[in-house]
Structures are given as C-alpha cells and as structure tokens.
Length: 418
Image (tube, rainbow, N blue to C red; front, top):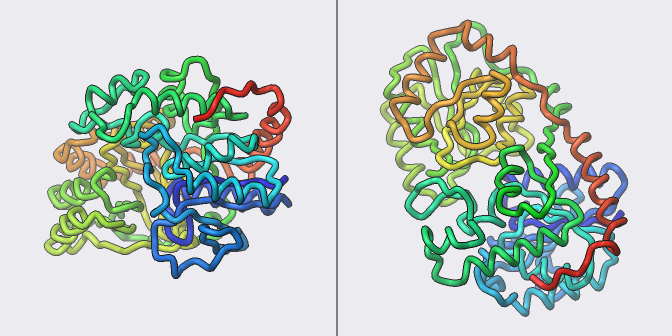
C-alpha cells in the first residue's frame, strides 16, 4: 500500500506524544513493506528542511521516512474555526496528491491541516482518523473551558460559544465540519475507552473503534535498569514542562513532602513555557534532591524511565492516553497520576499505582509521602503493572483499518465538503 500520514507537526521539529505515535505506526508500516509518506506543517526554521519538488512545500527525510511540510505561514486558521479553506494550501496539496497515487491516508491530527484534509477529501482519497486528543470536539484541544473548568463536551458548538466565546468563527459550523470529516472516514479510532466515550457522546450517529497506542517493547527489554540497591525511592516526570502537565505542582508537592531519602527527576522540553520552567528551577535550586534534565532523544526514553521507581503524571487537563505511562508499564514501573482522564482509569482498573486530586498540592504531598515510606505498597503496585500493546500489534490492526477503508470507499456516500 501507498500510505499518506497527515499530522499537525512532526519530526525533525517535534517528537512528543502524537508525533511519536504517528512515527511509530509509520515505521511499522514501512517495515511491513508499505510505501509511507508524511504530510505535516512546519512551524520552525526552514533551514532544517531541503527544497521539495512541489512548490511551496518543505521536505526532509527522518530515519528513511520522507516528510513534506506546509509552511505554517500559509495556514491562516490553525484551529479550523473559519468556514473557508486556505486556497493556497488546498492548491498545493491537490498538486501534491496528483503527483502520487496514494491508496489511503491516516489522519493523526487535524490541527493546522484542515485545508489539506479538505483537498484530500476532494481528491476522493480513502482515509481513517486516529483520535489522539479532543481537537475535533474542542478548539482548545483539552476539553477545558476558558475559565479553567472541565468541559462536558461541545453540545454541537453551543457550549463553546457560551463558555469560551471564540472570536474568529462560529463553533456550531466548526462542529458540523468535523462531523462531516469523521463521517467520511473509513475508521474512527480512539486511543482509549475514555476518548471513545467522549466522542460517542457528541457523535452518537457514528461508530468508533478503540485501539491503544503501542510501545517498543523490544527496545525496552534491552535496557538495563539504572536503579541501584540501597537508593531511596526515585520519583520521575517525563514530558513537556508546561502548566497543563502540572509539573510545577509536582515539584512544589515534592518539596513540601521533605523526603530526604527520596528524589525527583524532571525530564523534558519546555517548548516556550518560560513561567513553568522558571518555577521549577526556583524550587530545585533550594531542594537538591530535585533534578531537572532537558529533553532526551526518543532512543533514550526507556533508559530514563528504567531509572524511576514511580512515574508521576500530575496533569491538570484530562489526558487521553499518555504514551509515557505505557512506556513505564513495559519497564515494570507503576504510576502516581492525577484523577483525570485515561491514565486515572487505567491505574484504577489495574491497581498499578495511585490517583490523586489533580489541583491539590497538599493531596500530592501526602501521596508522595505515603508511597515513599511504604515499600510494600510500592511492590504491590509493581506486581499489577499491565502489559501494554506492542508496536507490531498496533501496526497489524491499523493495516486492517487501511484495507477496510479502501474496500468500503465506494460504499461511503459523499457527505459534502468540510
């Protein structure tokens, strides 16, 4: 098969959650003998890209994956709030598609890519959609209102208008455009039961599948744990150092716990959230058992996680999956997580860790103390860590979705433009 992956941002510029998921699936398809191409949006320095045959696109190759990128300057409506597509983007993508004979497309994320997807639909290319977050439901992405309150869903766009008041478009029209996009997909794949329920509630006329993201178990099993006997409990955070991820709350709670025989390692990029980075640095300056490490290569992730006794996910928004949680599972590491979203559901279902109120510093302090001082509690959680899906298994299931989309393309009624 000739497969086109469509994603809002990608390597070489970004390599966090959704980007890693799409990279993993694309590489699995490539190893299975399929021809794979990635279409994304470039937000960074154009010098990192080579010239592309198609006018207006950037191009590079990362680990044998050919990657084409639409310059972000051409995208006037990244959140898909306006009705009209970017004509320049649509024209570029139509030319890009006409020069190739793709069999199927896999939409990994539609932010910044809506005009490109409209061109893809106009070209009648079969496609599937993976729902890695709530962007089709929520232009703010996380189902969190402008006030900071959790949102129960868009209600056809009416809730968006009432609680978030977007100034650049009509939420009800946006909702209908995404309904058409989802209705035209050969498969709508949610990454967790939590995500599945949210979409099924808003689009009750559509069917959704659930397929968890896979992890590179073979790489994880090759890592020798860095923990040494006699060390205190080592808590760890791996992810973006941002306010929604709650990492400053975690640092504050750990400092307040005064665990002199335990440590906290914070690992990840700041991606422009200077306020959060400074808050963490200020706490670490006076607490030597808190260490901050910058971003690490995807190849080093399992080496980092294997050094943790407990993974901490203090998210302040409902996480839809958490790839790092499942990477920790394959390393046998339990987790302490906020009581929001998919990670909380998974941890509670298996008993492989603990949940704590998401905005409660005192609650996190108490939880960290409890885990650090009760080895039996920690060992019990370790014994219940589930085995996550492997990359090879995820790739197998997606190949099934691609073939089904191709078979049923002629049977899907044309539902209009988006």
